[in-house]
Image 1: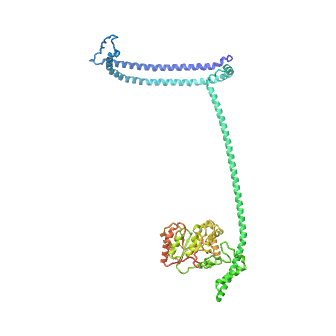
Image 2: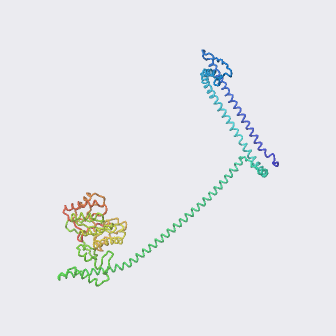
Image 3: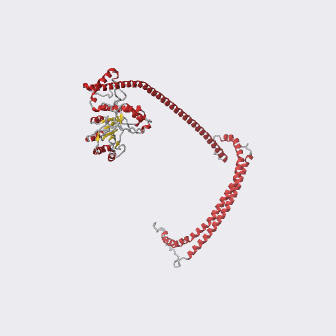
Length: 564
């Protein structure tokens, strides 16, 4: 401590003297202002006291003249030993004091009421003076603080290095002297505050730097994750493309092999068909000659077929894609051949169709899209009028396929409307004939043969097929006839393709005057209105002289204009 130079504290002493001087000036100014306030308050209080005193005197003077001062009653002294504990000398004078107080009460209340406005007025007059004094004191303090601020700052800046140096030099001695004694509480100066603030700022900067480093690392990790995900996605796409190419290659190989072996099969079938035609021609010739000898044409045909089979026995069990044997075009059993309607079986070489009216007013009722839960009711209505119709069936409801046989047994003609009734069958000829073969198998199981009558979904004039394949309807119309089928469109309808009432369907159905009418109706789900309209349609045409018949090989063929 003795080694510290004395002149090191000169800055601090100067600062203390400046502060004392400023404090003294401030106190002097405040004292003057307070004296002025007290003086004003004293004058107001003096005036108030005088008014109050005057009022009190006046009140005393105005006391009622009739009242006399109350004289105190003489209290008779009683010896101490003769007084009882219950009585006291104050008991005698209590009524007198109470009466005197009651007499003075109105005067005091009046005096207080008169003095109240005076006090309020004095307080109101002193209030501005107090406010003015407070404002002046505040102004002096502000001015003093503003004037001393630069001096304090300058003094603090000048003394800071000295204090630090002195603190650094004396710190070891202080620690040694302190020993185990408690460390005195340090007074925090403005410089210490600045130092602490700088330390805090440094810590905050370090935290910000650390946070920025963490965020940067997180961004790097996110970018790496995104890159990995992108690479995995590309790998998946590559694998999918490779798999797709492999599948395409396999499909192409299968198609190629199918065409190679299928072409050989088609050649064999064509050769068999040619032999069959030759046998048929021979049978025709034999039947002409046999007319004179009493032989039947069917016997000659059977002999010709037997000769053809004997020449090429390997082809006896072969079938085409549509389910018929080239050596027996219709593929019929003896039981089926006994049915006159078996002539409606598909035969590839029959191409003579009736394209003209039969000369009789005839209605051919046709029902598409069945069988369904309504089919049996349609059959009952037709039976009630002894009317036969034609059902172009599908396999959309396999649970009702037994009704195909039921309809056939009741004398109705069965035609085919494809299995699925989906327009996707128009993607290609192969798709169409594959679907047609499915319904052909179902019908064959029910009636014993495949009929030659078909109807295209949407008719041959539909344009929806163009969405799947351009020109497909023209190709199919030609190909089905080459394979022994005949397609039937319509020239009359009941309009049940839309949701109409039974009365509206009857009116639309009767709006046709052709001699031979192929009438389009539907036997599918939600066709109750058609079922209800059927009696009206039948009765309406009967009244016009029409007869009803099912389609057969002699029925006039109706074709629409092909638009695709």
